[in-house]
Image 1: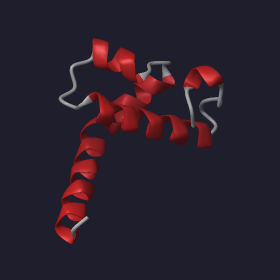
Image 2 (image 1 turned 60 degrees about the vertical axis):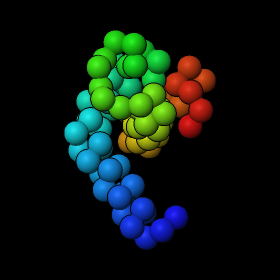
Image 3 (image 1 turned 45 degrees about the vertical axis):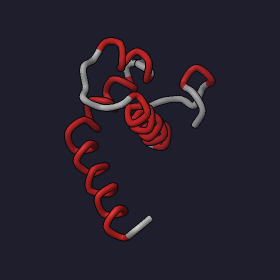
Image 4 (image 1 turned 90 degrees about the vertical axis):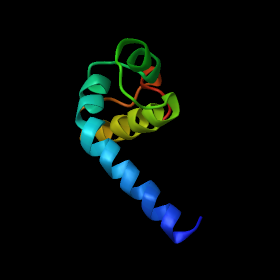
Length: 76
């Protein structure tokens, strides 16, 4: 990946996380998964991007001790 492409991707990830990260984390804490968020919310993000953000939020919540690492929470 070219240096400019890496920067663009990193900046895009930062902007998406700033705009949607906290809300997605709240939804994950309430038990939402990627499919439910795609179905019920209207974020201008692809399912793949949302899935990446859901997995990251789940990992953070587990590390913070605010969510248990159980099979229904997905692969972490």
